[in-house]
Image (tube, one colour):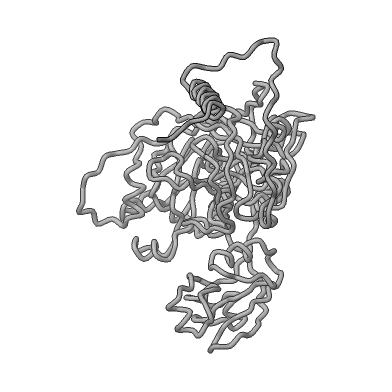
Length: 491
C-alpha cells in the first residue's frame, strides 16, 4: 500500500489548484484588466536580415504614402470627345469577292453620323508650362480634350502630336507653375522591384495601385518598336496614359496596355519605357512628327531548332528572313539567313529588341551590326535610312495635317493591297470627316488622282489641294468602279 506523506499531499494539492486556475484563464471569457494597472507590452521581435534578405524585406511591406503625396498632383485625368464616325452597315454576306481590307472599310459606309463617343484616360505633367504625356490611343481621334487636375481645375487641351507606333501622345494646356513629375531611368529597372501606377481607372481619379516589375523588354504583337515594361500593378480602362513610378518617386513608364481575356485586369500590364516617351515628346515639340531609322530587313525570332540549324550556341538574335532590294541592309551586304546578334554593342536576345534599337537611330547615321553567318561571327556597318510614316499623327493645327483640308486620313496602298485591288497605286481612305464626309467619300475608297493628275503619295495630294481654291475633283476607285467625287475644300 502506497503511503502519502502530508507534506507531499499539500504540495500536490497546491499544484492542482494552480493548474485549475491556469485552465480557467484559458477559457472563453476575456480577462479583465484594471484601468489603474500599467500593462507591460511584449518585447518586440527583431528579425535578423540574413544573407540574401534586404533590409526593406525585414521591415515589411513598403509605404507609398509620401510618394503618392508628392507625385500625385502631377497626374491628371484626360477626358475626350471623339469625332463623329460614319454609321456601320450590317453585312452578313459570306461570299464577298472584295479583298478583306476593302470589305472591312466598306462596312462603315455612312448613313448619317453617329453621336460622338466619349472616353477617359490618364496623363502626367512633364513641364510646368502645361505639356502632358498620355497615350496616342486616348487622344488620337479626339475632337475635344479636357484635362482635370487633382484640385478639380479643368483645362481644354491641344493635341501637339500623337505617335501611333509607340502609342505616345503629347498634349498642352494653358497653365503655369504646374506640378511636374520627375523622370527616372528605366534601364535601371530590375524584375521584382516595387512600382506603383496612378491614373483614372473607370473614371476614378488618382487611383493608386502597386505591384512589382514582372519583366523588362517585353515584345507584344503590333508594337515592334517598344520594349515594354511588364508589371502586375493593377491597370484597367482609364489608366491608359498614366505614369508608372519606381520607389524613388520617378516615372519609369507610361501605362499603355493590359493582357486580358475579359477586358479587365488579369495581372499583366505593359508600360512604355519613359525614355522612349520623352524622345517622342522632344520630336513632337520640335517638328510635329517622329523620325525613325530603318535598315530594310524583315526579321523573326530565333527558336531552338533555328539556333541548331544555324550553329548558334543557344536561341538568340534576330533572324533576317527578307532583305529589301536596294535598301541599306542590302547595300551593306546583309543576306537572308543572317542572324543579327548585336547592334552598336547592344546584345540582341530577341528580335523585337533590334526594331527598338534601330528605330531610335537618326537617319543618316551608321549602326555597327554583329552578324552570324556560316557558323561564324562578323561585323558590318549599315547606314540608317528613314522609316517613312504613311500617316501623320499631328492634329493640333488642322491646316498643317496632310488631308485635313479635305477631311481625310489616307495612306498609300501596300504592295499586297495593290495586287488584291488590281491597282498600280493610290491612296487608301482610312477615315473621313468634314468636307470629305459631306462629299460622300467612304473609308475604303482609293484615291487615284485629283484635278486630272495622278497621285501616288500624301504630299502630291496635299500639293494639289493647296493649289485648289474652292473645290477639288477626286478620282476615286470604289469597290472596283472608278468615279469622280467633287469635294468642297475646308479651312
